[in-house]
Length: 265
Ligand code: SAM
Image 1: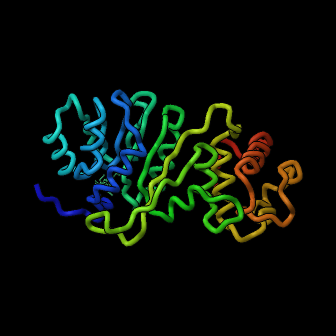
Image 2: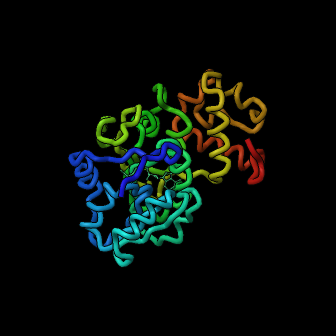
């Protein structure tokens, strides 16, 4: 069945066999893995994954593509969830999830943020993303790509950029380079914020004005912050702080009652 790629769903279909094989090799599927693919599209990855799995769940927003998948594969082998991945409660998909996908680039950050809430039931995530997004995910402090996405994701996952992919591996080719990343949730023993909400607020607000000194950006919260205890230099800007320092600042503000569960940035 012919399918015309829909721009609004970020459809760029993989056709390079070498790249497809490289992704599947990186994932290393095991027969009884609880795997979920986001955006299966024309099944470029779905087929090779199903060759190695007893069962796969896919989430596809495009009704035509979801219907095509249901026709192609038996329901014993493939569960098709037709809908927006941002509406999917991953708790309904079980435990020890292995999540994979060549993600729609127009909503890749919202998808990554949506999945943070389920990290405690995830074994790993392998995603194809825009190279620039992967660079932001893995960036270290005081480097150009470091920002909110780096801090929020690094507080929850260990991330490794695996390999880059040229636009001509896709049909139609995207305007940008792509890259495959592996995300592994950090263990329970990681440094955790007292409140995820407070942490998210402090990080968002700090990077809202990333070029300004942090003491200025957060000046109306300063009365509740012990900058020395957080190891933040007087002239420091958000992009110089590590994840642990943001957690310390968030904890101070949360324990002082400055950021409450109801407060907004
Ligand atoms: N996996 C296929 C491949 O590699 O050729 C398709 C990848 S294409 C970049 C992204 C896929 O995600 C498309 O099939 C698109 O319809 C689907 N998609 C877009 N937005 C979605 C959403 N919000 N929820 C679920 N699927 C979505």
